[in-house]
Amino acid sequence: MSNFDVIIIGGGIGGASLGAEIAAQRRTLIVEAEDVCGYHSTGRSAAFYLDSYGGPDVAKLTLASRKFLDSPPAEFSDRGFLRQRGDLHLTRGVLPELPSEVETRVVERPELEQLVPGIRPDWRRALFEPGCADIDVAALHAAYLRAFREAGGEIRTGAGLEVAEHSNGRWQIILSNDSRLSGTVIVNAAGAWADNVAKRCSVEPLRIAPKRRTMVQLRVGRTGLRDLPLVDGADGSFYFKGEGDRSVWLSPHDEVDSDPCDAAPEEIDIATAIDRFEKVVDWPVERVERSWAGLRSFAPDRLPVYGYDPVAEGFFWCAGQGGFGIQTSPAAAKLAASVLLAEEPDASVAGINPQIFSPRRFR
Ligand SMILES: Cc1cc2nc3c(=O)[nH]c(=O)nc-3n(C[C@H](O)[C@H](O)[C@H](O)COP(=O)(O)OP(=O)(O)OC[C@H]3O[C@@H](n4cnc5c(N)ncnc54)[C@H](O)[C@@H]3O)c2cc1C
Image (cartoon, rainbow, N blue to C red; front, side, top):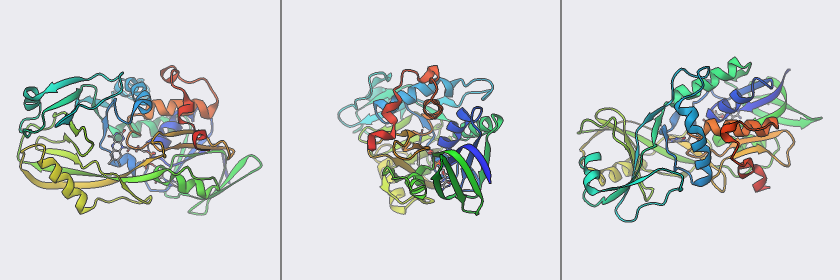
């Protein structure tokens, strides 16, 4: 039997980032059911950073993550993870309202035509958010796993938590390969499986709901697209961004209820994405180069959940990161680590009240 202080279930960005923040102080293990960490939501994101995304409370975590993502400490990475792109929130009518701390400016039709050549005439204006950037998700996730290991953390892949029981202040855990572990704290960082893991630990679930989102890489008959701004419909019906010189990443902004699973795209969602795209620009669609889908998992109030379960001793939630789990990971991990370790938070998150994200709000 291996003994740990903290056992983190799930090696996606949630588990990896929190693990990296605590491993120097607690003997910590990450248990990942798949053969590689990052196989599910973390490896399938649209990989952008957007200040305004997810509402004002999520924006607090996003804004507090910016500095770390832009210029991380040298020992964490020798280069930043962001590449500036900007975002156009397009509208045929009313401009969207964004959190007041987010920098924006209005773009009228003549400038819109320069920024998105070939844009169809009914898109009248847009709100431009200059802070939007691409995130190098693979590099960020790898850096967190590296930092975790360097701080003494252990990772076991290829076997998931099967069942766990709490007695005498410790968790006894059985993995799917029959190996046994014991730990003082279980961190539930299982993404779409967060409720499933809670049930396996006899902890009441929080109704974390996985929702499928589709991404399509399209080749189009237009060049010079790589540095195009992210373009999204202010009505929430599509977004796309330049990928290669002649290709875009496109999503129909779908949000389909799903069981936790290895999500795959449906033909109808790919067709919907292309149909909406063709109503925005006149670029000839040549072919679908690839498509994929992933699960974005939301708590009932769509805020993430970080903190000890008030009813189940030693059970810590790190779940419900929805569509913002990458861009919020630095601040969320620091905030969650301060709660987990019962320590003063890092200065970068000192102004954020962790109670906003506590599972207490559901109990
Ligand atoms: C299409 C799409 C686009 C997105 N775009 C963005 C974006 O642009 N910017 C952004 O910030 N975010 C984006 N997101 C959201 C982001 O990807 C997620 O919020 C984030 O990846 C969640 O990380 P996680 O670690 O909680 O989940 P995951 O990466 O899914 O990790 C959870 C892990 O837990 C493991 N697990 C489950 N059950 C068990 C078990 N019993 N035992 C052991 N391991 C288990 C799973 O195998 C999995 O690897 C997007 C998501 C999708 C799907």
